[in-house]
Image 1: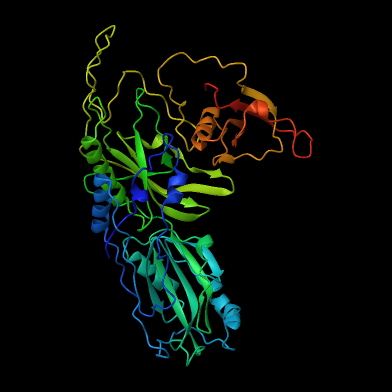
Image 2: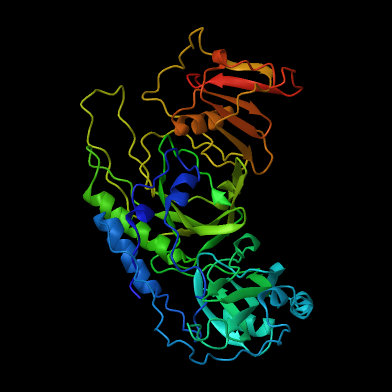
Length: 500
C-alpha cells in the first residue's frame, strides 16, 4: 500500500485563533474509504500499515506543499456466481432468514455473557451493527465467539487500540442469477482498529447481495484501557497528559505553530513528529521578512473524538516545550456535539532549533536590550511569563492581540460591553459553546469564537456558556423569549468591538 495524504489533511490547517481545537479543519479532512472489513471478504489479510512509509509521505507533503495522489483502493478478486464460500462456525439459526438471525436469542445471550478481557473495557454490547470507523487494520475469523482470542490478536498488533467481535450472516454460495438467495452460514468475525471502538460507530447493518441479505448480530466492542505512548526518534521520551496544552504567551511571543490531523492511519505520534520536523524545514526555507522563523521543537498529540467517535490523530506544534500543568483543555461542546481529548501526550525534540534574532530595527530604542538567554523559542522582550489558565478551555486564555501595545480604547456609546440582562430573545444563536469542565466562560475567549465565525457581531456569556449572534446587542431584544416572557437567567452581553 502506498501512503498518501490529501492536501487538506496537512496544509492550511493552522488554527484561526491560537490553540483553539480546530474542529472545522478536523471535520474537513476526507474520511477514509475503508472503515472495516468488506462484507464479501472471505480471507483475512495481514495489516498493511507501514509507519515509515506513512511518515515519509507526511514529510514530503509538508516540505513541498504539494498535492499527492489519493490512496490506492483495495480490490477483491472476482468470484464466479454460485462458487462455494467458506463455511462459518457460528450457531445455525432456524428458520434461515435475516429476521430470525437478527433476533436470535442464542446469539444475543452469547454476546451478553461474554467476559471483558484484562486490559480492556467494553465499549458496547449486543449491537446489531459492526464497527465502521477510522483506523481499521484487519479482521480475523474464529470458530467460537472468542473474545479473549480477539484481545490476544489486538495485543499482538502494535497499533491496535480496540476490536469488534460479532456474528455475520453470510451466503454459503456466491450469489448469482442461478443462486440469488443461497443457504446462509454464520461467520464469527473480529475486526481490529487503531483507535478506540465507539458504540456510535457500530453502524454497519449488513447489505443485500442479489436476494441474500447479510446481517449482523451479537456485536460487542472492546477498547484498551491503557495504551502507552511510543518513543519517537529524535524526540525525548513522551509525557502522558490529562488533556491538551493551553500555552500562554512566552514574554509576549506566541509559541503555538499550528496543527495537523491524520485519519488515514491508526493513532501514531510518529506522524506528528515527521510533520513537526518537516514544518521546521519549510519555515526555515520561507522565513519572515526579518529573517526569523518559527521552528517546531515540541508537539502534543491526542485522539480527538466527536460524540465518542474518533476523528483522527491530532497534532499541535510549538516552538518550545510546556510542562503538564498547562494541559487543561479536555474538550468542549459545540451545539449538540461533544468534542473530547483522549490519550494525550507531548514530545520534546532532543536538539532544539533556535530561530535567529530579528534584524536590527531602524527605530532608536531608549536603552540597550540585554542579550537574550538561550531558549527554545525567540522571546522578543524580557517580561515575566504569565501563569497557566486554571480552566479547561479550547482557546488560548489570552486577550485577542492588538496591532500595537497601545492603551485600551474607550468604546463608542454605540458599543455595548458587559451589559447584564436576562437571556435571550427568540433569535437562535449562531452557535452555542459550553465549557466541558463547567468552568465559567471567559468573555475574551467567547469573543475569540465570535471573531472566528466571521458573521458574528455580538456574544453573551453566562456560567460555562458562550452564545454567538449575527447582530449587535442594540439590535437584539435580549429581555424576552419567543413567547415574550422574561427568563430568570442573566447573561453578560458584548458587541464584538469591545476591548477585552
